[in-house]
Amino acid sequence: MKYLLYIFLFVGTLFSASAQDSDNYSRALNLFRDRNYSDAYTLFYEESQNDLSAYSGESLFWAAKSLQAMEKWEEASLMMDRFLITEPDSRYFEEAHYLRGRLFFLLGQYENTLEYFMDFLEDFSGSPYIANGLYWSAEALFQLGRIDEAQIVFSRIVEDYPESYKVEAARYRISIIELSSREQKLMELLRWSHEEFLKSSQENLESKQEYEEAIRAYQNQIIALSDQESVYTNMLQILHFKQEALRLKNYYLNELGRLNQ
Image (cartoon, rainbow, N blue to C red):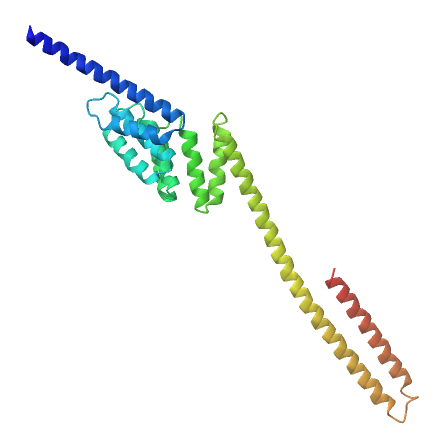
């Protein structure tokens, strides 16, 4: 009789503990949904350390998510790694893989982000997190300065996953890239214009110097001819020199006007 009583008490104790575990887990989930991540983490972590609890594995996952929500990304990464190793059969295993890649990005490890999501997209090709994985791959490419590749991936999200909530974010990124491209082209145009301006200014200066030197040469020739006794004999030649000087002046003035347009 005592033996049966002990069994009954033991079963009752297990049932009570199981109910308590369930209550703690549910309370932690509610705290997480209410964005009280700190208190949620405390309960999830305590539950994850209880090997007898049916919720220890899932609590470990939610504890990692709570740390991520609190922006404790290093700690969240370590805990998520632990979950992936110890709970391969969990219903949260696929989501945990996606979140691990997300944590690489949050830690600024963009090359690791790309490599991780390449494996994720291959291993979980039917996952509902595919569009998200592509999005963070594109963001990693963007951060690495591989803008053209990033635009291709963002465009793929828009075209292949129109129902994803990442579509608007992808469209926004595409518009930023296109705007940046236009700004870059404008800067190139301004740089080219500035170089052309400097070049034109130099040409203007050189043309002005050539004009002044030519005029001085003609003036010297006119003075030389005027000093001779046969002034009247050389009048036609002097007139010719003056006409050449005027023509040269008009030519250089036209050239200066053209270069300044």
